[in-house]
Amino acid sequence: MGRSSDPWMNLFTILGFSMIGLGFLGSPQVYVRFMSIKDVAEIDKGKWVAAIFTLLTDAAAVTIGILGRLYFTKSGDDPEAILGNNGEDVLSMITESFLPTLLVAVFIAIVLSAIMSTIDSLLILASSAITRDFYQKIFRPQLKDKDLTKISRVSTIIMAFSALIIAMIMNYVSPDRQVFWVIIFGWSGIAATFCPVVILSLFWKGYSEIGAIASMIAGFVSVIIFNFVFKEMDGVGEYFVALDVLAPSFAVAMIAGYIVSKLYPPRAEAVKMIEEIDSSN
Image 1 (cartoon, one colour):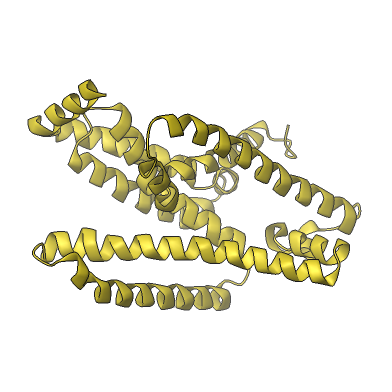
Image 2: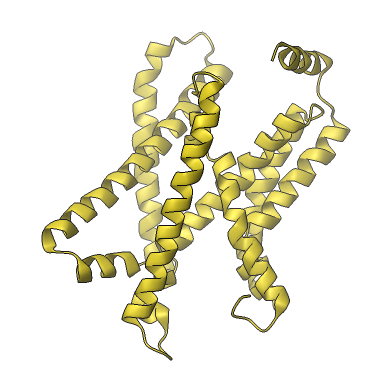
């Protein structure tokens, strides 16, 4: 039922954690997997694989946190003082305490490989968006794909070093905001920016191009505003801390997309194309 005596605080906490799953619908490196499915028959198989894998990994993460709390802390202890900010050190502490040195080394290699896999996927997607979707299609449509290689490499290097600089600045300016805060903030930004666009595009034919742009802008800006403004307000700030930024930002993006699409409806040829696709399926 939650650890607060305020039922609204417990409700906001539950909503905040449950909304994390929305990020999967809006995350580019995840969504591209759906786009690359070979045929319809693979969708059902992938659905069960994804559901079972998510249940196993999430249950394991929660169980590790509970075991670490029981093993390393005593009644009256501050968990964050022992397990790190938001308990982010618990996995490494359990690994070092219960596994031999050789397996600890293997564990570190596994974690680093998983991190590198995610990083290179994001960098490749971001580089492709900059070089092909932005630079080529808007400014140089006559440019051939093979000529984009150099631009793609340069943009990848710039983004990688920019991320490193931002991480170093954050560690110096706000050392209490470490891995978990950065991940949730980035995850919320991606989800609030792209997830409403995906959902409205799939289930509403009246969603327009201008409405999609409005959703993306509103979702991205809302994450920043809710995180750095609403969380600092007296009285209601603690509720937004429990709710986090994804749920309200997602709602704002959905509403913005709906209102703008009503004001600026999609072109007739776009609606006709969607209807033809639906009829062919």
